[in-house]
Length: 243
Image (tube, rainbow, N blue to C red; front, side, top):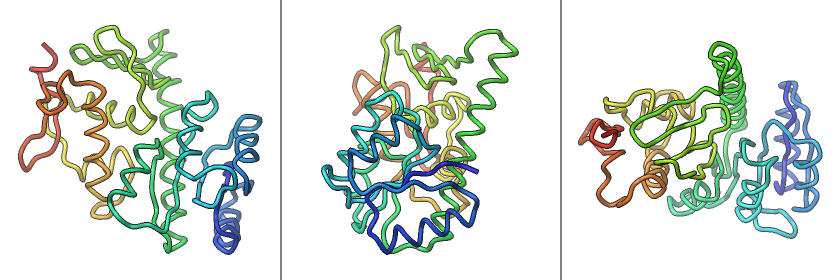
Protein backbone atom coordinates (compact mmCIF):
# COMPACT_ATOMS: atom_id res chain seq x y z
CA UNK A 1 0.00 0.00 0.00
CA UNK A 2 2.65 2.54 1.03
CA UNK A 3 6.40 2.69 1.57
CA UNK A 4 7.24 3.54 5.19
CA UNK A 5 10.63 4.26 6.73
CA UNK A 6 11.39 3.27 10.34
CA UNK A 7 14.42 5.24 11.54
CA UNK A 8 16.08 4.99 14.94
CA UNK A 9 13.49 2.84 16.72
CA UNK A 10 14.55 0.56 19.60
CA UNK A 11 15.16 -2.97 18.26
CA UNK A 12 12.20 -4.68 19.95
CA UNK A 13 9.83 -1.87 19.06
CA UNK A 14 11.14 -1.75 15.49
CA UNK A 15 10.29 -5.42 15.01
CA UNK A 16 6.78 -5.06 16.42
CA UNK A 17 6.03 -1.93 14.37
CA UNK A 18 7.50 -3.54 11.24
CA UNK A 19 5.25 -6.58 11.61
CA UNK A 20 2.16 -4.48 12.32
CA UNK A 21 2.72 -2.28 9.26
CA UNK A 22 3.54 -5.26 7.02
CA UNK A 23 0.29 -6.89 8.15
CA UNK A 24 -1.50 -3.83 6.74
CA UNK A 25 0.24 -4.32 3.40
CA UNK A 26 2.84 -1.58 3.77
CA UNK A 27 6.42 -1.95 2.50
CA UNK A 28 8.80 -1.14 5.35
CA UNK A 29 12.43 0.04 5.23
CA UNK A 30 14.49 0.34 8.41
CA UNK A 31 17.51 2.47 9.26
CA UNK A 32 19.70 2.61 12.34
CA UNK A 33 21.99 5.45 11.21
CA UNK A 34 21.04 8.99 10.21
CA UNK A 35 23.07 8.85 6.99
CA UNK A 36 21.35 5.62 5.99
CA UNK A 37 17.90 7.10 6.65
CA UNK A 38 18.76 10.20 4.58
CA UNK A 39 19.88 8.02 1.67
CA UNK A 40 16.52 6.26 1.71
CA UNK A 41 14.64 9.57 1.75
CA UNK A 42 16.68 11.19 -1.03
CA UNK A 43 16.97 8.19 -3.35
CA UNK A 44 13.54 6.60 -2.95
CA UNK A 45 11.34 8.89 -0.85
CA UNK A 46 8.89 6.96 1.34
CA UNK A 47 5.25 7.90 1.77
CA UNK A 48 5.80 8.35 5.52
CA UNK A 49 8.59 8.16 8.11
CA UNK A 50 8.43 7.02 11.72
CA UNK A 51 11.45 8.39 13.59
CA UNK A 52 12.74 7.45 17.04
CA UNK A 53 15.45 8.83 19.27
CA UNK A 54 17.95 6.02 18.61
CA UNK A 55 19.48 7.18 15.34
CA UNK A 56 23.25 6.86 15.24
CA UNK A 57 24.92 10.08 14.12
CA UNK A 58 22.04 12.43 14.84
CA UNK A 59 19.49 13.03 17.57
CA UNK A 60 15.96 12.24 16.43
CA UNK A 61 14.63 15.80 16.39
CA UNK A 62 17.80 17.19 14.78
CA UNK A 63 17.31 14.60 12.06
CA UNK A 64 13.68 15.63 11.57
CA UNK A 65 14.66 19.29 11.29
CA UNK A 66 17.31 18.41 8.71
CA UNK A 67 14.82 16.35 6.69
CA UNK A 68 12.45 19.33 6.55
CA UNK A 69 15.22 21.39 4.93
CA UNK A 70 15.83 19.09 1.97
CA UNK A 71 13.51 19.00 -1.07
CA UNK A 72 12.59 15.33 -0.65
CA UNK A 73 11.58 15.87 2.97
CA UNK A 74 9.52 19.05 2.83
CA UNK A 75 6.22 17.21 2.32
CA UNK A 76 7.15 13.93 4.00
CA UNK A 77 4.72 13.02 6.82
CA UNK A 78 6.76 12.32 9.96
CA UNK A 79 5.67 10.61 13.18
CA UNK A 80 8.12 11.02 16.05
CA UNK A 81 8.29 8.39 18.81
CA UNK A 82 9.65 9.45 22.20
CA UNK A 83 9.70 8.09 25.74
CA UNK A 84 9.30 11.61 27.14
CA UNK A 85 5.74 12.62 27.95
CA UNK A 86 6.01 16.28 28.95
CA UNK A 87 4.26 19.01 27.01
CA UNK A 88 7.62 20.73 26.43
CA UNK A 89 8.99 17.61 24.73
CA UNK A 90 5.93 17.40 22.48
CA UNK A 91 6.25 21.07 21.58
CA UNK A 92 9.91 20.51 20.71
CA UNK A 93 8.83 17.80 18.31
CA UNK A 94 6.29 19.99 16.56
CA UNK A 95 8.81 22.83 16.41
CA UNK A 96 11.15 20.45 14.58
CA UNK A 97 8.50 19.99 11.90
CA UNK A 98 7.06 16.58 12.75
CA UNK A 99 3.40 15.93 12.02
CA UNK A 100 2.61 13.79 15.05
CA UNK A 101 4.25 12.82 18.35
CA UNK A 102 3.52 9.50 20.06
CA UNK A 103 4.81 8.67 23.53
CA UNK A 104 6.35 5.26 24.21
CA UNK A 105 4.80 2.95 25.37
CA UNK A 106 1.77 3.02 23.10
CA UNK A 107 -0.73 0.58 21.63
CA UNK A 108 0.15 -0.58 18.11
CA UNK A 109 -3.45 -0.10 16.84
CA UNK A 110 -3.17 3.58 17.79
CA UNK A 111 0.02 3.94 15.73
CA UNK A 112 -1.61 2.21 12.75
CA UNK A 113 -4.60 4.58 12.96
CA UNK A 114 -2.32 7.63 12.98
CA UNK A 115 -0.28 6.26 10.08
CA UNK A 116 -3.46 5.67 8.09
CA UNK A 117 -4.75 9.16 8.92
CA UNK A 118 -1.59 10.86 7.66
CA UNK A 119 -1.49 8.73 4.52
CA UNK A 120 -5.17 9.41 3.79
CA UNK A 121 -4.66 13.14 4.20
CA UNK A 122 -1.65 13.13 1.89
CA UNK A 123 -3.56 11.25 -0.82
CA UNK A 124 -6.57 13.55 -0.39
CA UNK A 125 -4.47 16.70 -0.76
CA UNK A 126 -2.75 15.36 -3.87
CA UNK A 127 -6.11 14.43 -5.40
CA UNK A 128 -7.85 17.74 -4.66
CA UNK A 129 -4.84 19.70 -5.91
CA UNK A 130 -4.89 17.79 -9.22
CA UNK A 131 -8.64 18.25 -9.58
CA UNK A 132 -8.48 21.97 -8.85
CA UNK A 133 -5.62 22.48 -11.27
CA UNK A 134 -7.46 20.59 -14.02
CA UNK A 135 -10.61 22.66 -13.54
CA UNK A 136 -8.97 26.05 -13.28
CA UNK A 137 -6.00 25.48 -15.54
CA UNK A 138 -3.82 27.05 -12.86
CA UNK A 139 -2.33 26.18 -9.50
CA UNK A 140 -5.10 26.09 -6.84
CA UNK A 141 -4.82 28.97 -4.40
CA UNK A 142 -6.61 30.42 -1.40
CA UNK A 143 -6.46 34.10 -0.51
CA UNK A 144 -7.39 35.99 2.64
CA UNK A 145 -6.33 39.59 2.93
CA UNK A 146 -2.53 39.70 2.59
CA UNK A 147 -2.19 35.87 2.69
CA UNK A 148 -1.95 33.73 -0.44
CA UNK A 149 -1.67 29.95 -0.08
CA UNK A 150 -0.70 27.65 -2.95
CA UNK A 151 -2.68 24.54 -1.98
CA UNK A 152 -0.64 22.28 -4.24
CA UNK A 153 2.83 23.17 -2.98
CA UNK A 154 1.94 24.51 0.47
CA UNK A 155 3.85 27.73 -0.28
CA UNK A 156 2.58 30.90 1.37
CA UNK A 157 3.04 34.59 0.63
CA UNK A 158 2.27 37.42 3.02
CA UNK A 159 1.89 40.77 1.23
CA UNK A 160 4.07 39.34 -1.55
CA UNK A 161 6.75 38.07 0.84
CA UNK A 162 7.39 34.31 0.82
CA UNK A 163 6.76 32.63 4.19
CA UNK A 164 8.09 29.15 4.93
CA UNK A 165 5.59 26.84 6.65
CA UNK A 166 5.86 23.19 7.59
CA UNK A 167 3.38 20.84 5.86
CA UNK A 168 1.16 20.63 8.94
CA UNK A 169 1.20 24.43 9.34
CA UNK A 170 0.15 24.77 5.70
CA UNK A 171 -2.70 22.28 6.23
CA UNK A 172 -3.85 24.16 9.31
CA UNK A 173 -3.74 27.50 7.49
CA UNK A 174 -5.62 25.99 4.55
CA UNK A 175 -8.46 24.90 6.82
CA UNK A 176 -8.56 28.20 8.70
CA UNK A 177 -8.70 30.08 5.40
CA UNK A 178 -11.57 27.88 4.22
CA UNK A 179 -13.41 28.78 7.45
CA UNK A 180 -12.37 32.46 7.49
CA UNK A 181 -14.78 34.63 9.43
CA UNK A 182 -16.03 31.94 11.81
CA UNK A 183 -14.35 30.47 14.90
CA UNK A 184 -13.07 26.89 14.67
CA UNK A 185 -12.59 24.93 17.88
CA UNK A 186 -9.48 22.92 18.75
CA UNK A 187 -11.57 19.74 18.48
CA UNK A 188 -12.73 20.67 14.98
CA UNK A 189 -9.18 21.40 13.89
CA UNK A 190 -7.93 18.11 15.36
CA UNK A 191 -10.61 16.25 13.40
CA UNK A 192 -10.17 17.97 10.06
CA UNK A 193 -6.46 18.87 10.01
CA UNK A 194 -5.01 15.94 11.96
CA UNK A 195 -7.88 13.48 11.27
CA UNK A 196 -8.17 12.64 14.97
CA UNK A 197 -11.36 10.96 16.26
CA UNK A 198 -13.54 13.16 18.51
CA UNK A 199 -12.19 13.43 22.04
CA UNK A 200 -8.84 11.81 21.23
CA UNK A 201 -6.50 14.60 20.14
CA UNK A 202 -4.51 16.95 22.37
CA UNK A 203 -5.55 20.65 22.21
CA UNK A 204 -1.92 21.54 22.96
CA UNK A 205 -1.10 20.30 19.46
CA UNK A 206 -3.41 22.98 18.04
CA UNK A 207 -2.17 25.71 20.39
CA UNK A 208 1.48 25.29 19.45
CA UNK A 209 0.76 25.33 15.71
CA UNK A 210 -1.48 28.39 16.07
CA UNK A 211 1.42 30.07 17.89
CA UNK A 212 3.81 29.12 15.09
CA UNK A 213 1.44 30.54 12.46
CA UNK A 214 1.17 33.79 14.40
CA UNK A 215 4.96 34.01 14.71
CA UNK A 216 5.22 33.73 10.93
CA UNK A 217 2.17 35.75 9.81
CA UNK A 218 1.55 38.46 12.41
CA UNK A 219 3.55 41.69 12.68
CA UNK A 220 3.03 41.41 16.45
CA UNK A 221 2.22 37.80 17.46
CA UNK A 222 1.33 38.96 20.99
CA UNK A 223 -1.48 41.14 19.58
CA UNK A 224 -2.70 39.20 16.53
CA UNK A 225 -4.86 40.91 13.96
CA UNK A 226 -5.09 38.08 11.40
CA UNK A 227 -5.48 34.95 13.51
CA UNK A 228 -7.44 35.68 16.65
CA UNK A 229 -8.58 33.62 19.62
CA UNK A 230 -12.34 33.80 20.23
CA UNK A 231 -13.08 33.11 23.89
CA UNK A 232 -14.54 29.61 24.45
CA UNK A 233 -15.07 29.17 20.69
CA UNK A 234 -11.64 28.67 19.12
CA UNK A 235 -9.55 30.40 16.46
CA UNK A 236 -10.59 32.60 13.57
CA UNK A 237 -9.04 34.34 10.58
CA UNK A 238 -10.78 37.70 10.84
CA UNK A 239 -12.06 40.25 8.39
CA UNK A 240 -10.01 42.86 10.27
CA UNK A 241 -6.88 41.03 9.20
CA UNK A 242 -8.19 40.85 5.64
CA UNK A 243 -8.49 44.61 5.28
